[in-house]
Amino acid sequence: QVQVVESGGGLVQAGGSLRLSCTASGLTFDDYVMGWYRQAPGKEREGVSCISRRGSSTAYAESVKDRFTISRDNAKNTLYLQMNNLKPEDSAMYYCAAVFFTAAVSLGGSCMRGYGMDYWGKGTLVSISS
Picture (cartoon, rainbow, N blue to C red):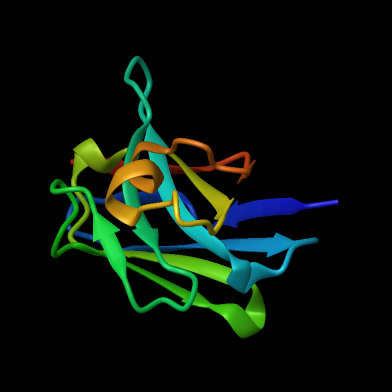
């Protein structure tokens, strides 16, 4: 049984930092492209960042470039999102998702759009106060 579990959310002041983690079990982690997504109340889900199976390639939403860094530790089956210089508009539920790599998967395309992801976590809440 596959499980994807996010952690690390919380309440911080604007300008602060948080590191989110996502641990996956029940799958061969390095067979999967991984992504972070977020959804604020009343808004559509948006892709935040995606990372290739070995971590050599990444994609970011324009709104988080130069502030957020995605990484993964395949030995620990864990995905990370380091978030710096947080802004109130970053407040949202953050989700982690995994997709089995095929030639049809593209980091900046299908992954960032959240299309065809195989597994989703339940999310971790990030709240940024001004």
